[in-house]
Length: 224
Image (cartoon, rainbow, N blue to C red; front, top):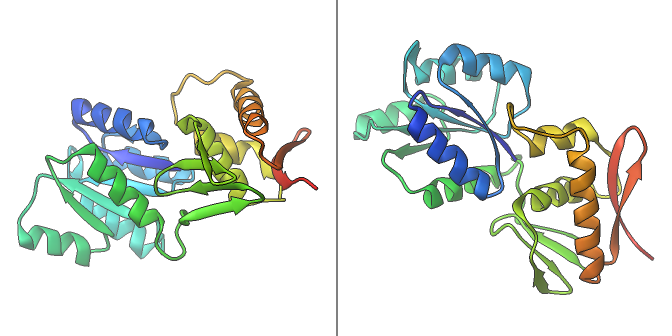
């Protein structure tokens, strides 16, 4: 899942980015309304994490602008404004959730997953093909009901493939979902991740296979 974090405090932004990256999210960061709007127009995101006190205006103006443009992307406000009236303004103004600073990364990650599980959103609860199941809430993968150790990046890759099982997922879609702007990504990073995932699934006795559509992308199929 790829998230856009709009936060002008560098220390907090880095803390949130590091924490959510460990939870399996790809995070892009910016510190102003102008940059946030440019990022939204340039890339596909599953969720926006939005501070209200930004150097070039109030974050609620971005919420209103997106909603007026019929952009239904989930928006989670992160702010020090904890008053009841502030929360009502945020939620009634088009935000989907409201979290007051300071907060724990674990709670933030849980709220992100909850928003992404809503009807029509990105996350489902359990994705399954053959004897492989991925729980998008706990980010766990099991084969024949036995949990296997899969790093967050490979979980994210498997999730994207399972959501479109038996369909080719274009490599640029996978790369956008797995890697954030500015991340040091080698030309064969995706191929390497696919290779590791294949070995991990095969070693656990999975009856699904990741196939390559040369020059296009990848797809996952059940064997037999």
